[in-house]
Length: 344
Image 1: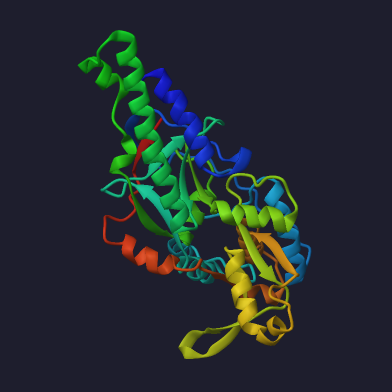
Image 2: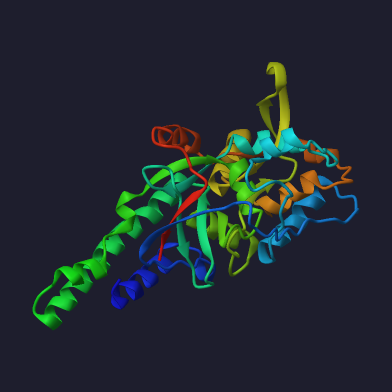
């Protein structure tokens, strides 16, 4: 691929990702290689302290992980949490592996794949080959749309530059420039339990998986937390202390759960529906929204030796419209492990 094309695509994708200085993507030539999951390193950083925390302390403490390195849960990279727990159910935490899997499985994420379900990987400035699970369909679509359009523009600019310099564009020039690899891409749905499992394993055969919040959710998290940046791979969750919602439990029995939202706007909407009288008096939104982090919260839920029963009431709330979007994404081939498309 022509060096000018590489440089332009690098700049555009870096800006498009929307992760501030943490979102690092670049684009090169399309290649394919196998992904052997058995060869990997596990960069787990599981919290092992035996300290007892209340739910409030847990959520407050995990918010700090938004600004530090990742935490993970121990499970096989070839399996979702549900499969891992079925094979080796060791429920020493307040929330069992199987219960956690059921909580995460109902939350869809969205990945960019080809017609056969093979995921796309890109190389960032940090030289890490990475594939993303987006928590929002709209964010996945935004990234894909920008990649397609910007790649088309970069390729057209390169052709124009070569023609102006050489007087014509040869077949060899066309082959060197290449085609737009993103035009063969589409969006598919992947349950959060599998996304978390793959993301928490660190480097897998030279590549990484990351769960990625939307640009809007990142901005909301930074404004809530007062921070300047969100490290890549961290997923903010929004909540209000002591706020609960009714949820259908086992056997149709209604239970009260403590919701954790991926979208701040969705949390505010629920609060407003519960506080209509306050809204009439002028309080249109809550002033006590708190922030925590997905992987740190998961780790605390399954931490061996935990005693805080309030952790059992936590429930992750799927982003608005994501379940409906996920159903539409199921029309094509499902997400496929074992292969990857590297866009450099």
